[in-house]
Length: 218
Image (cartoon, rainbow, N blue to C red; front, side, top):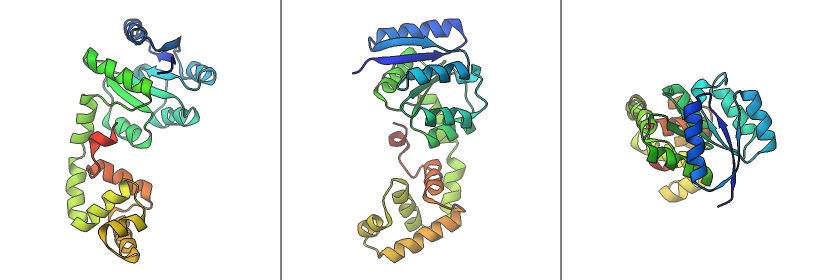
C-alpha cells in the first residue's frame, strides 16, 4: 500500500495526539500535517491533493454539510475520516447519500472500530461505524412504510434495478418486459414518489432500504 499524507483537523489535544499515535502505528504514513480551520485545511489540500483527512466535524468551522461536500468535490482524490462526537441524522444522511469519500467513526467507538475506519480510509474505501449505520437504518422505517403504500411490488423491484444503476434496456431484458413497459413503470414510479430524475429516485430507494445497506456503505 502506498504511503499516505495525513491531515488531522481536531482542536482537542488529547484526541489529536491519540489519533496521531494510531496513524503512525499503521506504518503507512508519508507525512502528518495539522489544521485548525477550514481555510488552513484547504491550503494543505492544495499541497497534498491525495491526502487522508481526519476531521472532527463538530469542532470545525464548516458552515454545514454542503460546505464540507463542496470541499470534497473540489479535492476529489481526498479521502475523509470524520472522527467526531454525535452527529445528526440529517447531516449523516445527506453526507452518505451524496459522496462515498467520507468514512465516519464516533469518538465513543471502541479502539478496534476506530482502527478499522483508518484502514478503510487508507485503502480509499468507505467505512461507517456500527452506531452511525444503526441510526441511518432505524430512521428509514417511515420511508419503507410509505413506499409500501405508494408502489406496487413490480414498481418497487424496478426502482431497485434503477437504484443499482441498470438501464431501461437492461431492466427490460432481465424482467422479460418490453422497453416501453419499463418506461411506463419508470414514469409511474417518478410520479408517485414525486421525484424528477434517477438521482432523486435512487436516494429514495436508499432511504427505503431497497438497496442492501451493508453493501451501499462500503
